[in-house]
Every structure is written in structure tokens, then in C-alpha cells.
Length: 385
Ligand SMILES: Cc1ncc(COP(=O)(O)O)c(C=O)c1O
Image 1: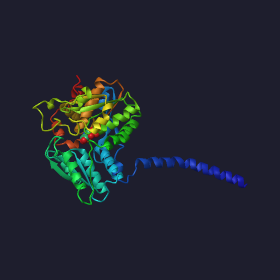
Image 2 (image 1 turned 90 degrees about the vertical axis):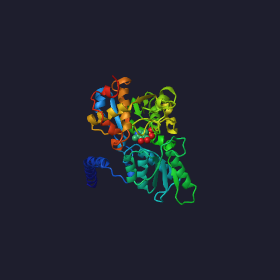
Image 3 (image 1 turned 120 degrees about the vertical axis):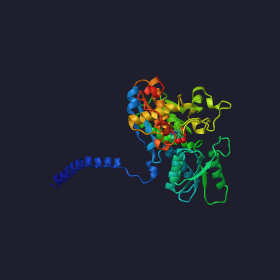
Image 4 (image 1 turned 135 degrees about the horizontal axis):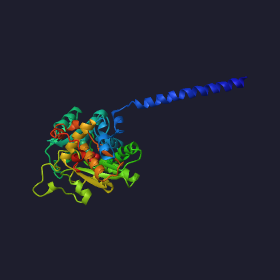
């Protein structure tokens, strides 16, 4: 009798478990969807991959944007700022909550990412930048509480250039008797930069495209995104092509295509005040950084993109997709579309990086974009008649 009772109990238990299990599973998956995060840093990375319907349908390729603008600080630079801070902490060079200072020379998004994370972790961000940096970015830095040091625009060989000014600032504090520690983040030369894209951005994309990728396209500022992702994808398959999207005035296009660093604006007597003569911010350079050099062996091709093409693409994506993208993202979108129309096979998967949003480019790039009438002919937008 006892045996029968015992068996019945077990059957009852099993039946109950079978009934409850789907409910527990459903609850867990719901919980996953409404995941809570304990720190701002937890929100960095795992950005969405957005299919760009209008570009895909018009080209016959599957074109996606890696939405790095969805990071909490609004750009891919959150990833590298966090990686650099954690590296300094691991080496015991800075301590949270002690007022230690992180110096960086940047006129772009990296300063905003450092400023955000410094506030979250109890550091001070000291950002050196050219004195003609757009008011949009200065305001953001101020609101995140960064110390701002403006210097006159100068070439990298000038000791007062903003990257050199940041390096010097950190060195001066480090060699003083102050209790405060200071470090120079050095995004252009720091290995943490390409490594974080190798270990997070690229693997995320790889999973998001279900391991089917034909082209990866992005511009190069420090070169970290291009280097880390190109290296990762080449290890996955040698047939995945990495393409540099380069704005007018940058020497990197010629470096990739012909092995020489040269642009028209380098001609004797024509050198401008700014090394890269474009409305586009964040990408294009006339020197080889350590991060770019790391990725150079894995870059297959380059597309040069004119400001006019990027501006027309800004309007196209806004009109067709509701996207309001920053200037470098529009350069990448032009290169992706041109590759799709001229070099890719129908059905190929193409991913480009959407680095930041148009909100950081209102007073410069987008002011000019509004001067262009919307063009529905995509071939005209990317100059592929
Ligand atoms: C808006 C924007 N897009 C693209 C880039 C280029 O990224 P990377 O430095 O990884 O080459 C930068 C870099 O400063 C940037 O600020």
C-alpha cells in the first residue's frame, strides 16, 4: 500500500513539474527581456543590428547598421573608454572615488564617453581639445562635468597639439608630489582600443548575422574599430572583406589602395589649417596610428566618400528610415551602398557601423545636409550612375 502511495506521489510530482516548467521558463525569458543592470557600464555594448530596408531593397544585398549610437554615451567610444579605464585599474594606476584624473586628447566622442564613465566611477575627466571644437560637443562635455582645456589647432608634431597637451598634463601630475594619480588614455596608440572591438563588437555582429557576412565597412579615426573587427572577421573566414570608408581629404584611402599616404590637400602650398578637409568628424587621418597599423594587414579595400555624398545619404536615410545619423555613419552608409551596387553579389550580407547620432552634428554636418533636397535615386546619392 505504501509503495502504491509512494509511486502516486512521484507521478503527481512529475505531473506538477511538467505543468509548472513552461511557466518558469516563460518567466525566466520575460525576466531576461526586462534585464536589470547594476551599473551604467553594464549598458555598454550588445548594441542592436538594424536591417536598412531601403538600402537592401534598392541594391539586392542585405545591408545592416551596427547601432553603436545606442551605447549609453551615444557612441562606440563607450567601449574603448571602459576598456581603458578597467586596464588602468587592473594595473593599479587609478582608484575609484579618489579623484584620480584621466587625461585624453580628443575633439570627439571619446571625451564624452570618458566624461560619462569618470562621473559614474568617481574619477575626473580632463579633456584637451582644439579651440574650434563644435559647441554641441563642448556643451555635452560640460554637462557630463569634464574639465575642458582648449588649445589652438596644430599638427601632431607640435607639442601644444591637443593629444600632446593631454599627455603632458598627465605627466606633470604624475611627477608632482600630489596624492592624486593621473593617466593619459591615449586612444590612438592604446592596444585596449582594437582589442575591445575584437572581443566584443565583432563577435556581436558575427552572432547577429548568424555567421553569414560578406562585407564589413567602417571609417578610421584611431583605427580601433576597423582593426579589431577586421582581424576577428578574417579569422572567421578569409572571404569576408573589410573595407575602409574614408572621407575626402584623408590620406588613408591612398594608403589602403596604393600603399602611400597622400592626399591632394598635402600638395605644397595647399595645406589647410585642419589636416583632413571635410565636414565629417571622427574619421579620416593623415598619419598611421598604432591602432590602424594593427588592422592594416586585414583591410581588403577602400572607398573614398565625398562630403556631398554623405550629406545626401543623411537625407536619404532620414527620409526612408527615420534615421538621424552622424557624419561618419553616413560616410559608412555610402561606402556600403556603393559596394553593394558595384562589387557585391546579389544577396550578400553587408554590415556598416552607425557610430553616433546626428544630434552631435547639428551645427555643422546636418546644417549643410538640410541644404540638399532629398534625392530618392540611390544611385545618384552614391554617385553610381
Ligand atoms: C563619430 C565617430 N565615428 C567614427 C570614429 C572612428 O572610430 P575609430 O576611432 O575606432 O577608428 C570616431 C572616432 O573618433 C568617431 O568619433
